Image 1 (cartoon, one colour):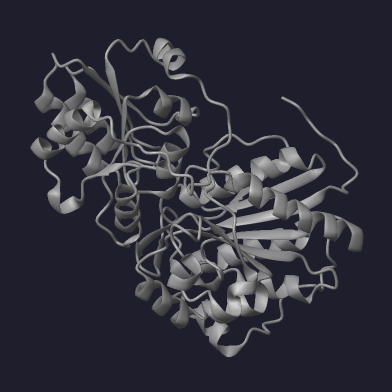
Image 2: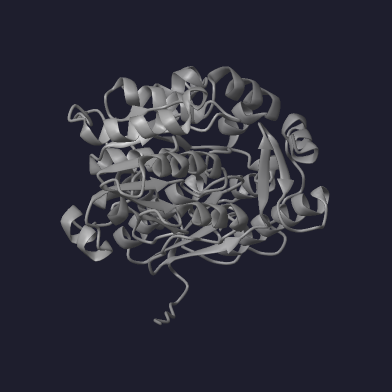
Length: 432
């Protein structure tokens, strides 16, 4: 293990991801943080995360994290404590206090917030207010994936939670992790018009790690037949999809010239994972929890079956692999919207929840393995978003370095004094 001692003058970047469900928010921030830490050698990136499994993904030198008490999303705008038995109000207070103290001590020059501009329950508001009062106020950037939910749902939620006002007041820039030509995020979610000058479409954020060739990885895995890789992202809601896939694989029979690797994700319940392993007995199927080299496994496949999450689909696009997408039915419209968009562009095949059955899925699997008309090459699918986002953050760091000293501890009196406007303060207290 390497240990590092510095003079404390590292340039400081902080990221926030609430991580109430799945690994998508954490994955994007981790990918961007890793690129930035390598690009700016004296930088320190501190990630505030809520993922119950911790950071999950490998972190390079210069990147570390603080774990917030975990919560889980039960519905649009509805969050509950996941593990602690301390009640809702104490969980809120603990997360707010942890964030605020980390911001006060770390003193970031750039703050990158993923997906939720005010944080769940408005938990970022005290820290946003404190940062904006600094004489050397940092650049505060909001990062949004391309598709959030049905536009009318997101607009209504943002109006109710004071999100538009928070963006207007606290944010200097908005990264859209997508391409306007494919999905106009700004127009769909009310971020055009007055917010247009803040928008920056950076492309799709994908892992930029090198990956092994298909033949090399298949040799390592000792794969002798066509390979099906079924992946469920974080895995918290992947069991229904994987169960149907296992049933379909069983219908194809143990003697079919097909092997399968199921990667459940670290957030799947252990009982569900064990049920999949029971069903896999006697079949040429392996059930894994989590793999560090996810791209290698996907690249080894003849067909990847996945849900409609951001990271999984854009990894498929980067690798130009055949993919069968089974989006989750809810609670948001995000995955079904993305699956339709991708399938219409000829990038993947898709089967939607209302069509799903083991027999239908078995037919799809065999048909997709034989197809040669997809994935098509789509020049609009820019998968270099992590580098472009990092480049822009580095520009902000350069400007901050010129105008002010780097990391130092704020004086104890530089804390929040409750100066939020009434609507945003109500949001913080209500937890809507």
